Each structure stands twice: as C-alpha cells, then as structure tokens.
Image (cartoon, rainbow, N blue to C red; front, side):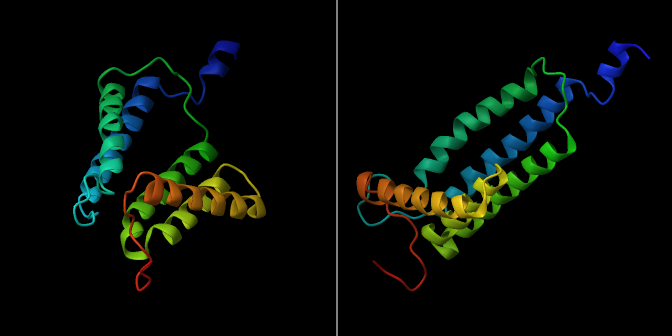
Length: 158
C-alpha cells in the first residue's frame, strides 16, 4: 500500500466536516439567542443579562453560515476521542444555558467552568480552584463592573 493511500485512510473530506460543524454551531447560536430572551433585566436597566448571549450569537451564526456555505480546505477528520470531547463540550454548554436561570449564575457557572476545564485535561484540584476563581471574576465583572444583573441563587437575594 502506498504512503498516499495510507495517509488518506480515515479521512473525510473537509467540506463535510466544516458543514457539520457549521450546522452545529448555527444550532447553538439560535439556541443561545432563543434562551437569552428569558433573562430579564432589573427595573430601569439599559442593558440586561440577555444582551451578552445575543451579542455573541450573532457573529457565531454568521461564521457558522460561512462554514456551511464556503467550507475550508481542512481534510483531516478529528479522531474519536476529539469528537467525543467536542460533543461533551456542547452538552455542557447547552446544559449551562438551560440551568443558569433556575439555579442562578454562580452554581451553574461554577459547574460548567469546572467541567469545561476538566474536558481540557486539567486535574480535579486545579479545575476546582480555577473554576471558582473564574466564576467569581465573571460574577464581579458582569454584576458590579458592567452593572448587568445576573440570575441569583433561588431563595437567596443579595
């Protein structure tokens, strides 16, 4: 068997991979846009917590359409482990979007960030510490610096 045919074994044309990724990212962008309408802002708030997901979902949708309509030249299909990790990442993000309102920002973000850090291969100890620091930093940034009210833990009103 020649080297070229061995190299082509297990490859899927990049056009298919880019279009699949584009379709999944487009679904994520539409879901983020849709779920962000449930986030309510406080009284007389010029910018509510739903603005950030909508702001992110617009370029995500545009870039995913670009992947669908004009796929690139990447001919290497990711291995099984990479595909599973990508599916797990999408599952964590979808669960986070659905749980941030009923659980509140802090617990939902802490769980999502820790799981995402673990998916990137960090140990539990460093994932817990980094997740707690990142979650608190995001809370301070959005709640106090940007003045965007975030969903509180049910029954706990700061």
